[in-house]
Every structure is written in structure tokens, then in C-alpha cells.
Length: 283
Image 1: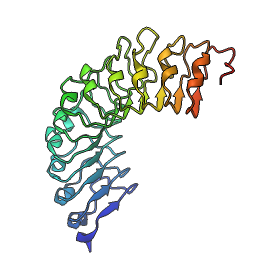
Image 2: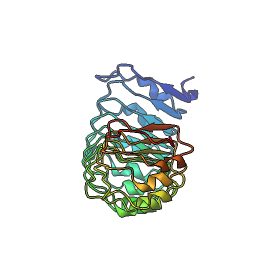
Image 3: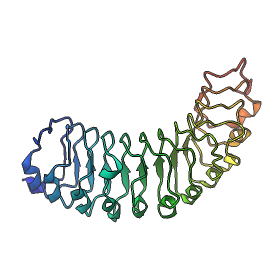
Image 4: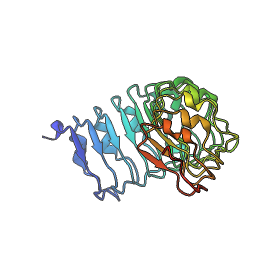
């Protein structure tokens, strides 16, 4: 029966110390495999026989590298390796030559740079590099990855975003929380007209470096500007009529304008930990 198994979840089994089940090598028809929380120190060699695999999840393990065998899975679409100990040397560049690769999650690892040749994964739709040690994003990355719809680079050491990010015209979710973007003007954001979710928590936003023209984002529904240094609500926000969620908590805001009555679709508003003494009647 093993060749006919299409998917299996081994989550929370103990496969440490080479205890991975050998007969997985006979599951040649597997389309998806989850090995989360299984105490793996390396990618099991048994996976090298799974040529039809489309989804491989190896989250919450002790991996230090992604074995080159993974690069031979020609049908692989989704690779999830979050919460491991992977460094740049452990990410083979051949991985990003897989034609169908559309989801890559390398969050919560020890990357100091964007993995080499990532720009070759031209069919990528979802990219999560959050909670690493990345200091910059190479400009060529967004020249070719123009189909990305979800991008999370939060909790790194970024001080700017490359201007080429304006090429991501299909981008719907952008998360840059907890990066020291002190001097970044982020002028390219208003060009991303497909954006629905924008999270800029703790990115040193002030009125002086707030991206001008943000009101052009007519599809924006979820905006997080918490833990910044905003002395007031930027005027552009009052023009975002599509907002459903708005988080302005932990700033230095002392008043809300009566213009907030333009937020007719708003369902969630967080303005805690500011300097407000009253709320406008238009609320």
C-alpha cells in the first residue's frame, strides 16, 4: 500500500538520532509530507526517493542545512523550514532553480543575507524571511520576482528597502515590522496598488519619514503602525476608505481628527498607549 499513500503528517514524533522510518522511501506517490517538531538534525536521506513531492514541511527542528536531495524534487511547490538553525551556507542555490517552487518559508533561522540565487525562483508567490539577521536586500531580488503576493521580512536588521520593490505590482501583503528603517522614506510603497495588508510596527516611522502618497492604496484593509514615533495621525490615513483594521497604538498621538468618519468600513481600531485626552464625536 505504501506507494499509494499521497500524504502523511509525522508531526511531534521523535525522529532524532537517526530514528526516521526507513519505509518512507517506498512512499513514491507522496504529494505532501509534514515533519514538524520531529527533532530532526538533518534532512532524512529517505526523502531522496520522493520525486513527486509537492509540499515539504520541516518546521521546528534542529536543521542546520537543506540537503541537496531536496533540490532534486522537481515537483516541489511549497518548502517550509521555519524555526531551525539554518545559516546561509546551508541553503543550496540549486533549490531556487525548481520551476514550480511558489512558497518558501525560511523564517526563524540564522540567515545573515538573502539566500544566494533566490531571484531565480521566478514563480515565487510567498516569501517569508522574517526573524533572521538580514541587514540588506539585494536590488536584483525584486527585478525578477515580480509575481510575489506575500512578503514578510520582519524582525531582521534592515535599514532600507530596495527601490525595485515597486516592481511587485501583485503584492498583497507586506510585513516589515521590527526593522531599524530610521532613514528609509519608503517612497515606493504608494506604487504597490494591490496591497491589502501593510505592517510597519516598530520601524521608526515619524511624520517626517512617513511615506507620502499612501492614500493611493485604495485596496488597503489592514494597516499596523504601532510602536512608532508618530506625533499625529498622518493625513493620508484619513483618505484610506477601505481600511478594516488600523493599529496606531504606542505612538505619541494627542488627537484624532473628525475626518475619521471617512473610515466607514473600519472594524478594528487600536489607539492605546498614546496621548489622547478625548475622542471626536465623529467616532
